[in-house]
Length: 144
Ligand SMILES: [Zn+2]
Image 1 (cartoon, rainbow, N blue to C red):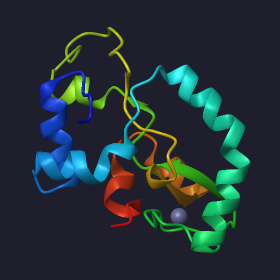
Image 2 (cartoon, helix red, strand yellow):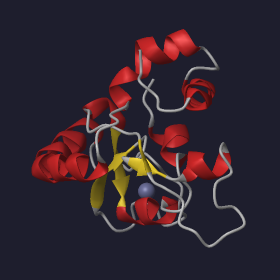
Image 3 (cartoon, rainbow, N blue to C red):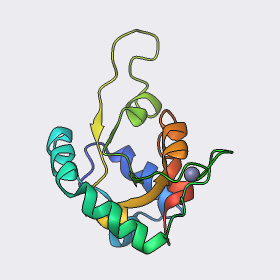
């Protein structure tokens, strides 16, 4: 079972990925998650980044999987993109309504893994465009 810190997160991701089916989420999407400390996941990712980019280009060719910016792929520069971000404060904001009315920084929660299943190919344009809208890759980059 995916080891979510908050029970509402399981529900949130089940809705996002598995039409609300919690069992399907655990069965089909567990590799997308890794709740280890963010710094550790980043460190590991940087070590395999080049290899992953090469694998993704072999898999998808020079074709961005996000296609969310009008200038998508105009500049042929690609990056691996985490479908579930390594960390996000979005659920703390959204589901737990933390710091909504204060300037206090909302805590980042660790979510995504460095597993190939959680990685897709994005052009620099789309990847930058997506930055502040978390979980957008899920709709565009996730292979069924
Ligand atoms: Zn693109």
